[in-house]
Length: 415
Picture 1 (spheres, helix red, strand yellow):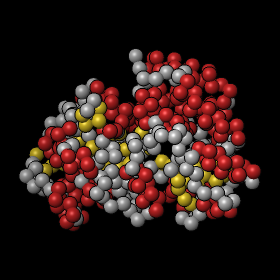
Picture 2 (cartoon, rainbow, N blue to C red; picture 1 turned 90 degrees about the vertical axis):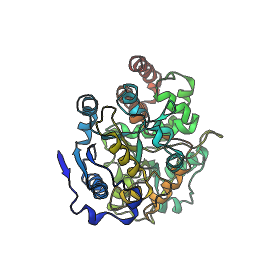
Picture 3 (cartoon, rainbow, N blue to C red; picture 1 turned 45 degrees about the vertical axis):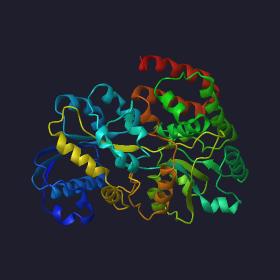
């Protein structure tokens, strides 16, 4: 669906805070392709572009919004056949195929000292072979959301180590409460568990090498990750029949107090609140340390803007990317009534929400940011991996067969 963003009410919406990012001399055209098709993200992006239009009245901006899932299948075609000047996408290995194919421009010169400092938490995930290929505009934390009232009832505190995590879990099980809810019907939720067990057991570099196909799935270090996972499975830590539930359908177990926690992204908070949990009942902790000395990296899916190599109006596109990366713009678009997520720019303000505030601290101090298993691994490898994770959670004795299949897939995918 297309729309031409006109500078009508935009001028009224433009805050004085954005004035510092104005580029009054911009003229000509700017074509922007977005995958923000859901209502709130769409309205936020249209508002941001309207603000940029108001700052650059001689610029003609055309915005095309494509359904998020359709965008994933269309991006390679439009990057080669009808490239816009700016396109949304994702950080990390997910942008690698387009960088390797020469379809995204190197924008390293935009990443001077100031931008590198402001966006430092995501610079590694925007960098391939020392060069940057876009700018991030939002991300959100993953972690363990838990029922604080249940923890308090049994005298439990937020675990800092794996041993403390297991000890808490045993207390909950002894009192008839599952430690974790999860719905693996659509597979990806199991990917979150694998990511965190991998990041905490062997660290960010190992995890990224594994998802990049550089490490065998039959490597003993991979088996060590699954051994930690099996400790929880053998305890009966997860809700039963989780393959029958979507992530939303698994929420009631936590709402009703039948499960105490949920490893999930921050987007779950809104639905837990809508289901009736108060902020006094609900809290968050960072996934605990497993291997001493391994720096704490996090899952933080990061959404990004890029300049296609075949873009026709690159100077206008570069000005837009600088605008998007600025602290004030990121503060505005990530507010609770907009995207409701975290700004990447460290000088931005974070919405007055306890989960966003805590997530901002966790991500700002992270040793590295993974994008999530189905973004870090190629699509075919991600599908096979998450199918294997779900099977392992139900039939852990199948591990050797699962890893053999994943290793075979690795040989096919990364040729």
